[in-house]
Structures are given as C-alpha cells and as structure tokens.
Image (cartoon, rainbow, N blue to C red; front, side, top):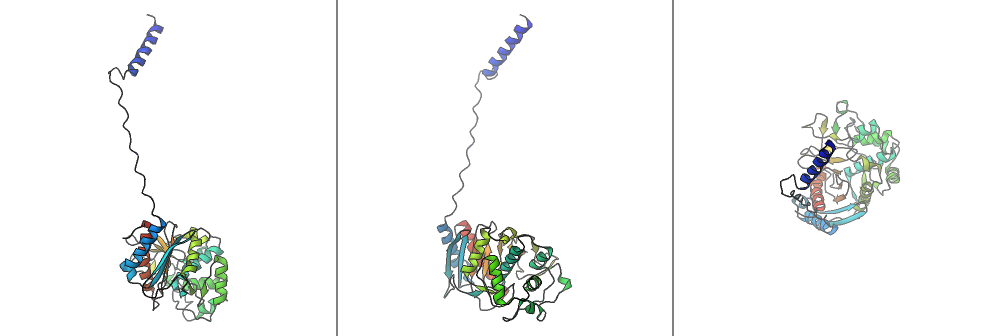
Length: 334
C-alpha cells in the first residue's frame, strides 16, 4: 500500500470513528434544554394605580396627618387619577398660595431663558449656595428690586458662600441681577408665563415663594416638564449639592433635618438612602407638594392650605406624597 492510499484509508477511518461517537458505540448525548425565563408580570393598569393611590391617600398615617387635601397623578399626556381626602378638602381648581413650590418654577424659567445651558452664577444662585442667606419676605406692592433691597434681604454673608442654605435670598438676588429688578407681581407673572406656557400669578414679587395657583395649573406645568417640552426636564437632578449639615461640611441649613437629600436647580432630589426614592420635588410651607418621579414617567401634586406658614408643613405633605407615589407606581397599597 503506497503512501497516498494509506492517507486516504486513515481519513476514511477517522470519519467513521467520529460518526460512530468516537468508537464507543454510544450516541452523543442530546443537549439539555434551557428553560425560558418566565415572562415579566404585566404592568398595573391605570385603574389599578389610581385605586392604590386613593387607598394610600385615605389610609396611610402620613396622609391622615395632613388632611384635608387634594391629590393628582399624571404622565406626559395629562392627568390620570385624582381625589380628595378629609372634611371640606380643596379641589383641582382651588386657588392657593404655594410658597416654596415657586422655586421649581423659577428654576425652570432660568433654564428656559438660557436654552438649557446654565452659567456658573446661575448654578451658584439656584443651588442656594450664593451666600445671600438673610432673606425674610417681600411686600405685595414692591418690585423684585425693592424687595431685594429691603432690610436684610440683600445681605451677603461671606461665611455662607459656597454652602447650602435653604432660603429665598438666592433667587431674589438672581432675578434682580438678570432683568427682573423693575418687575412687580403682574409683570413678573407675565414674564414667567410667557416663557413657560403657564398660568401662574404672584401675590408678592418673591421668586422663591410668591406664586398662588391651582393644582390644575401647576399639574399642567409638571406635565410639560415630563413631556420634555421645557429645558428643565433635562436638568432635573443636575449639579446636585448636599444639604445635611450633620454629614456635609458645605451645608448650613435644611428644612428637612432628618434626611440627607440633595438640592438641584430650584428643586429637591429626594435621594436620602433610607427614605428617598429619587423623586424631584418642591414642597411649600403651606403644604403644597409637587413632584416628578425619578424616571420622569409620572408627575403629581398634593394640594392643601395649612393654617400656618411653616416649612415643616411642606415636609409633612412630602411624606404623604411619597406614599401616594409608591402606591401609584406599584399599583397596590400597602
């Protein structure tokens, strides 16, 4: 047998051995099937979400504590669910002072004016680290400029520059320096509304706390943010600063001392490791609490008028609002 014949024979034998399973006489084992993962559970329906939110609003201890109030939740397309709780509660159209819920509005206005690109000075003022920390209030007949110059409103505290201090002086200073100094209530509302497509009014020319409006009109503003129609949408949570003096050397004062949240451009980032869910919000001293979910899929309002102007009223509404938001997202309560 010549060399060529031997090579052909060996090749044929090798093929036969492989075909017979290596010569063992046993067929190759069949592959073990891999089970498909179970399909994810279906998302809750709007009806399920609304029912869960209504249960939280009426049953959660944090919500019982702030009765009476009106609540609503929606998405980019509009309001999806609402209700009211307690004796003689407000309704969607009830006009009320919203105090610090005005802060998100001014942050959105500046973002709109800047085309979404803020300056370092904008961030210094809107993150409340400017050092203008002695603000008290404005009078109804004043302008932005005369309010800023009243008493200690425009006093600069060098020791607080670069440190978070929750208050209205930062925004009043910013507005005074950026074209709004001569504006009273009517002119201020006109400028803000023209920029944002909103329907707000001002009872005093205070950018951080002067708006009075309804849950319906504020909800329409939040809807525009969630729909991506305003520049602030892309800036939610941007450039955050720490707010808790007990854990952060660059914080002086926060109205939420029990939490280590952050503050962004005229709004809170509710990212405390224990209590937060990452939502963006702007609670007011009379209890008006607007929010946008961390994933920007949902917006909501909790509207009430507490008898006293106290920052803790806003914190109390925030705690109830969280319960409503969690129930809405999960589609169940508890």
